[in-house]
Length: 217
Image (tube, rainbow, N blue to C red; front, side, top):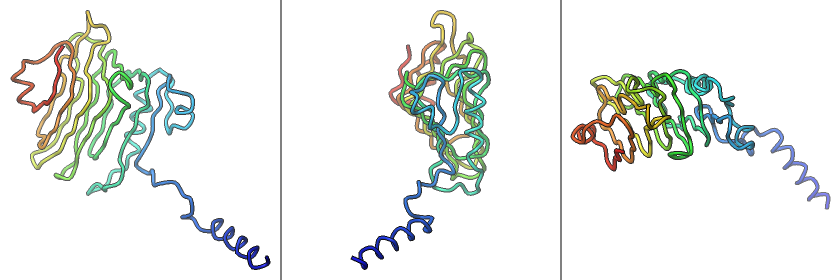
């Protein structure tokens, strides 16, 4: 009995003093942003909590929290957006980083931009940098004056992934993105399952951009 008790005490001391025991995964480059109308348990546990006004501030703070490293590490470098609607007064901007912006699905994670561009990414120097945008909807409140997604690279190679993204108007009668996806000096791009409604470029332009399974409405 004494031997068993001594074992339990030693085990308790080990876990109390060992920093690696039951520790959470490294989240230094993984942040969750909750919409104002996200489920309560998601909102309460999120790293950044939006209030439905100027939500671009919280999202950009999360994007800026991803550390700059050259070359970028292979660790998780995501900003995860909850279900719900984010109300953005200004565009979302990322510069010189590998990044993944991940929602919960089209029509599940919605980002409204009443009077601004949507997402603008400037990739770092070096072919190892990449950008990924998946599982969300960007909605515009303007009439053919704004760009939904713009990605800028340089001539030494870049990788871009866009999948399961919808680019839609807030008001289907009056609103429309002027440009859906604009790429500059970006290579190795995979753009698939994209829905664009309003201000749609001709089919040959969609083909030129390498869009797969694009739906124009």
